[in-house]
Image 1 (cartoon, rainbow, N blue to C red):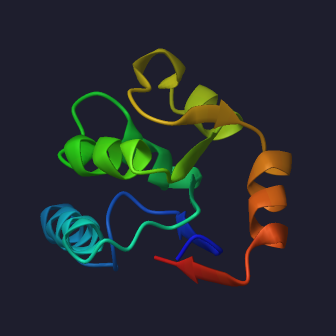
Image 2: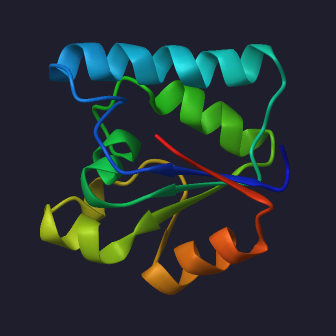
Length: 112
């Protein structure tokens, strides 16, 4: 999956209540780790940036994916808009250009 980019645009997965969305996202990330499927990059924008800041229930899984080589890119504009820039715990703060560059290099883009 080194040539795959995952886009995280929500605070979880799907459009159910927030608790279910986060449980689904947590399970998805843990299955990536269990199956040794490490995407080349995971890009976070809009509500998705909220999953990479302190207090997020998926920080441990995201940290492990980063340790295993996944490049985590968080949208600076989104973090600033939500007042979360100082709360980032994983990944790098980048711009839409960084997210677009990751997408262009990827042979597969998965949007959650």
